[in-house]
Image 1 (cartoon, rainbow, N blue to C red):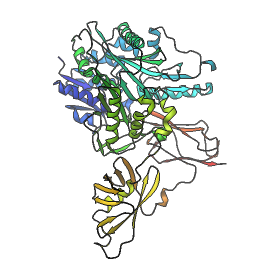
Image 2: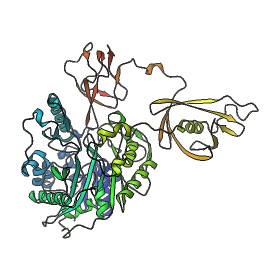
Image 3: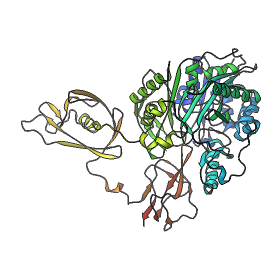
Image 4: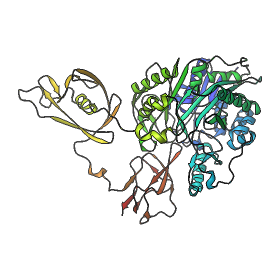
Length: 613
């Protein structure tokens, strides 16, 4: 019997494994980097062990340090979660060699499937060796790991070498393995996968299908189970192929076999020899705890002859600290508050007051809804996200709500190109026009310029806010009956709640303030000073860091005075394990270059200046 589990991971998945272990009466050990010293996963575990450093290569990718931590803390088993070392056969062997139980598949199965190139060869599928114009578009992929890192679509042969180099660098940073390969890119396909669970007694379950087609940068955003719209024949085919792949490598534990579906044809992509981020939708539909089953399998227990009966439909949305309207730029800062209605499941690695740093994936949480039908599950999830309270960095919440309510999604007609087609419309700002007034009234509560009402009406008071990138002004007065505003009746106003009567309809505005940041219901505003600070102004053509990160590369030969063309890549930033290109906004001359490789930058740091010619 397993009595103590070290979770070799961080964030949401570490907290999720700890939760199941606690329910089973199993003691837990967390590991944490210096950046994660006060992280939620380190707080909820029974014991925590420090991994010196902050970069993944120095901490969560150091299998030797993690094994030492398990032994020092008295753990008798290791659960790898997903990402990091979860598909590293060497780490699995090191865990076993140390006398610990590995809660995962055998190292031999990991080796056979963890490299996508070897997995394809095992199933008789050859990657592209020489790419020609006729092969385009193609997809460059990391041979190890997943999550969209080390993945690039190439549509022009001239871009191939640069994209191969970028993919290798990104894969090496995220997984410690820079191997990449090239395969055909299927336009308009659906991403469908099968959850498998196998024991040591020869039983393999295929726990239905999932559709994960809504992706940004090849990383999943919304997932659901079962995959809608599959014919009975195709559903049976992919489940049978998944079981065959698992049996071919003697698989044990939880894993996922992924396909790209176009029409009635399923193309094998890979087998992930670990738990998937989207596993909760399968848990909801089949009524199982996959982490608990992983532990039971690792203890040698046998699965039943067949999986439980599937019931209903489940949809999961990944809540990211990122700005979809700005090329999905990751965001950092203090997460002041995160709550969602109790009707849905929330898996998160953050609590109110936690800081979101630059070193790791920007996913804040997964929100999951289960209902008897797909339409009901979608409605429940969209409503929960719409009502969620999220105070802190910019998130993709509005994008998620709009995606779930988009007619293409509700009709189950999506594919992996959904965001390529619809992103501008899904990210169009739609702030509440009354939010600035509500914020101003809440701020003015209890503060009268004159110490009370006067017979003569006071002059209007004004407050300026930045909302959705634009300045807005709110005007109000201190009158005989209290606060007044043109066009609306102020029913109630205090520091936390404003009620306005507009044409006989009362609307409630909940207001929260953290310094200059103000949240009115779901609308975020920044209170502006009465007089702007001239030192914060930049000359036209200034390129500012859109996110915190590290300058990993400057274009070859780029120096001040060089001519540049609009859209030309000038430098690359790495943040949260993803690389982001900074391009010339116009055709002109690079008059200033301040960025150098290795430089750490904050949002708004001046990187370069391009003057238009």
